[in-house]
Image 1 (tube, rainbow, N blue to C red):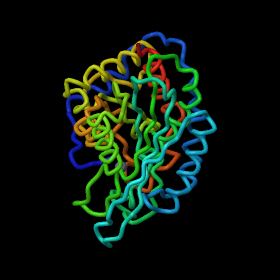
Image 2: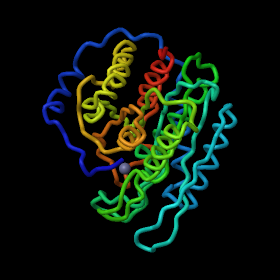
Image 3: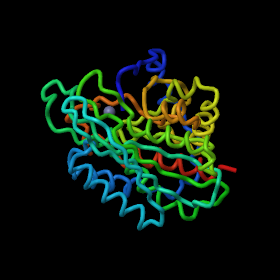
Image 4: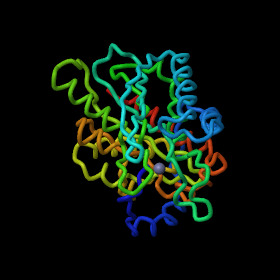
Length: 314
Ligand SMILES: [Zn+2]
């Protein structure tokens, strides 16, 4: 995810200790989301190595996940687009993936995650040009969706669900390079389809899942998602589900303000999309963003809440 405007509301961090110490509500029966399986998906993705947009690693990952979602019963459509590399001027092939569940349902939910990795771990003090495998920043959202796939064929109506894997969230080599190329393209296509009447269905709401596997997971409400009147209800619903389920990793207070894929989805696509992100991650954009810094328990916390939220859509 992007760093540029991320900032901290200090008072929230001060409250962390106090909140963690509080007595928890009794846990409700957990949904059938397995953190262990999700973690195995994360490890398989990370084992590919770097997955920069347009690279062989990205191609390999794409094959892996397309096969996975098709085997789970989804329709997978590819949304190719091209960008011009700002340094070399060469065209680079990009591709969003849209994983469609229950295509007959005209009211839909979007669950998004970026599946590219940053070209370099530029925040790594010792090795800023080293190898970056993006276990949390990249693989975690994809792994969560891979595990969630198992529950989708049995999801009762009325809503259908699309998993959208965004390419080029951070195809950035320098400070002026734009972020969110995949989600921007997707949002524009969706808006155009709605305007022309070609798209006969619509998104009711969306969630972007980014950096959801930190072993030390604390998910505050992302500040933009809280401040927009159309996304605020989505945030309230998700954190209410977490509270009811006794998932302590969700803290129902605004934390960081983050630029992420939810911004073009909401501003260009007009899809009320909240960002689910734990931005407090010491390994962020370093060579230490590996599977060792992640946990299945964290993936299960987020995955269970998202699944329950989907099941409660009426
Ligand atoms: Zn990032």
